[in-house]
Image 1 (tube, rainbow, N blue to C red):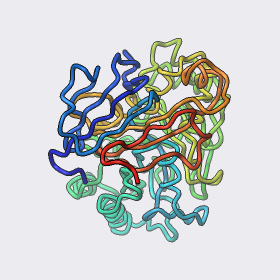
Image 2: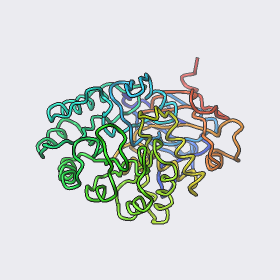
Image 3: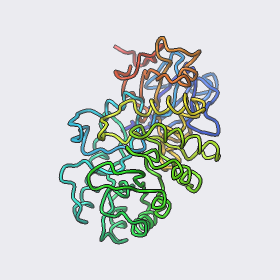
Image 4: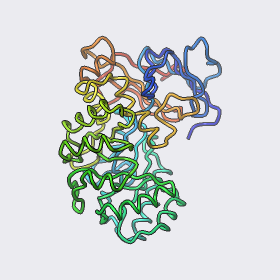
Length: 395
């Protein structure tokens, strides 16, 4: 947890990305945080930078709000039984992701489906990720998958216990739009956000969720609109883009052609502010530590979207749609940052042009709640330049 009133100064920033789709780039070279919250940003000469407990020299690299993965399937701690892999969350931090949102702890062996069991597991998952943050990453977990027999009182109980999200509608026994809508409405009434599985089945027990059911259910997020793994037909994806005011979630663990169709449709409809990104991992395709960065590069390079805007899909768009205090360069928001630079020998005149050519940037540091959490990434290509902590001096 951040130390109260402890000051962080990040100076000599080459490019400030804001996460704000209406203004993706901010003029300035310095960010100040106090007690793990953004206090000020702009030009160092105009800011109070004295008395900092920690000073980072960005060395001219780009600062972005920490990336957000809108769609993960955690189980417990930093372990996933789906792929028998340890430290997958830490690996994802090394891909610049500082916040994750659970779409259901569906890979828990023996996952209970009775009402007492599913509520107990959701509350427990919410608690253990609240109490234990692997490598400092904020994992918003405890997302129950709805089942037949649930009543409004169940959602009221879950909300009172701290549960804020539903797992993917359609991964449990409820597969008809009318029942799902009733439960989604109860959840929303009590402050719980909802996501729906979109496309063909992904795990045993799941099934096809088509555009009609998505529209009837009316969840807050159209989960993996490009399929997880199998996408809907083109006309149904376009229909969802046209008719939905909710978040349109594109995932790495999906159909790339359908991802571009979604992006193109959203752009033509003036709905780029609805586009958010996830990985949908860990899943059958494994753990994807660089999945969010890869989606940013893919959508920018093939989807006719400038890189600064594409980074908003992975930061501010998600923050706004999910009601989070991260993902935006905004005073009072959490001081969660990803510092990155153009990869060594990558084409392009700068990091943005390089990403627009389809290349991944190199992550040089992540910061969560004003605390340095990782240095040079072990997973991204090496960056041209690296930030350094100058106070207290690195050993």
